Image 1 (tube, rainbow, N blue to C red):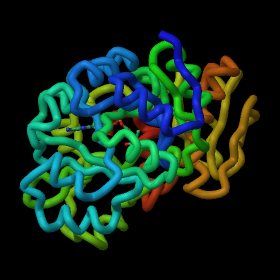
Image 2: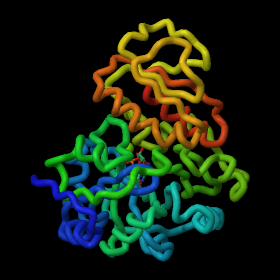
Image 3: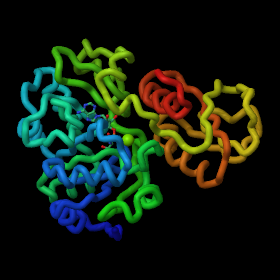
Length: 314
Ligand code: TXA
Ligand code: MG
């Protein structure tokens, strides 16, 4: 398959309408999109990503009216979350209507909805006039792509087109909340933080034990570069070998590293994390040392991705 590179959302939207797979930018990470109502088009997403068939896809929308077309039994608290966090780096699980075929949700009776805020994403989605299923546009198991060049690296020849846009401003995947029950449950932390969610729905639950059970995708290894990832405390001298190693953190490493990224704050750490992982792999580094951060605010999402990359479970 020849992959078309374009910066014209009309051209990308036409291809998607014709049943093709199209990678598009969002403010979180790039997505690998297809018509969420077309089972063959959705099957092509799973094939291109080599994604296991039991891992459901997020459905992207561009106006809030689509929520009631695609989902039903929407709780009052979910309406509040929509009013507050759509559009933005936020996704919500709701009972699905039949318009969304089983393959899109991997057989689940719930659909995960997200409305991106990036202007180019909204324009593209609106031009498709369809709900668009899209996981992150990486090969399964690789770090999510935050730049179109990363998508090209993983997906050239595997998708119909790549809509070129800006580097993702958040750099981590959206916050996911299960809004299908009597009270909301945080399934994946992101740039919409627990503190922000609590201000809207104070009774939100976060039991990490629930994540593995209710979100099929959580059982797969995610966000992992080829280099082995170790988490370190500020100032720690690691026990593992630091030869051919990268380091990312807020404070300088206490050991010599071959490639260092010092972030000024949580936002920059989150934005740069996945592209740093990819750059370490390009350089053929063997180990990546990542500084732990306090799991507050955006720190919760950073620690969640770091633990997964390091192969820690929780
Ligand atoms: O920021 C994002 O969320 C990006 C952009 C492209 O929107 N998308 C993204 O998709 O990160 P993906 O597929 O890489 O991660 C979505 C996660 C997976 O762990 C999947 O299992 C879970 O959401 N998920 C999606 N639909 C679900 C459903 N119906 N029930 C349970 N979990 C679901
Ligand atoms: Mg993903």
